Length: 241
Image (cartoon, rainbow, N blue to C red; front, side):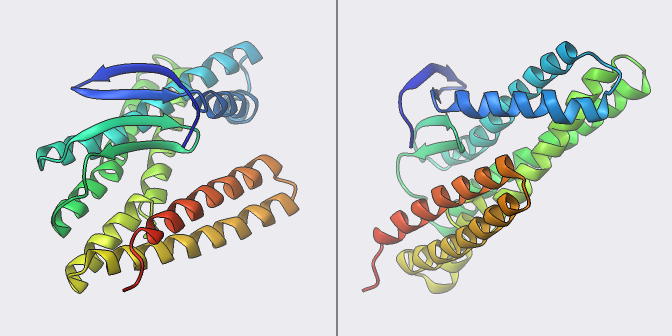
């Protein structure tokens, strides 16, 4: 999943690890916000202000990913599933469960908790941004909250795609598990959808690169490779009998 741990701390009883690979995505987000997002929404501000706001946006994104994973972890702990830790790395985050959920309901609820938290965060940032803008307190801060609203909604929707190992794929597995009454078969089907989705995302990334959108295209391609390998790996653990 990654290389070395950059920062390690505890929060609400969970061990949190920040992988060194996170530095790349943090730098990429800060650069993208400082050179594209904020200059387009706040054209009258200086480049230094755009970079400061970009750093704030990257920090907000980090907190959003952390809270997303803590949503999974809190629900899992409520079902008695131990949490080995939460790791944030280049492709997002992962809550490492001590063992698999024991019922389809547990699987569904643990998987759905992350996108639910992201949706709540999106609504929270939308409300805060609107309040600050209406009160004319700080237009730049309102712009940061608007970005965090958008990114959390995107994060929630993307994770709900029914393709393993995304949260939507785990929800899909829970539904199949309930229908088939066979965890292994449900996992194989969910993993297949994950691999097909990864192929589609690869094609999208390649098309993006062809259009000249090199960074977004390469990023989509790398995420697709990660998702494909993760889905293929989990499918190998549950071969067809």
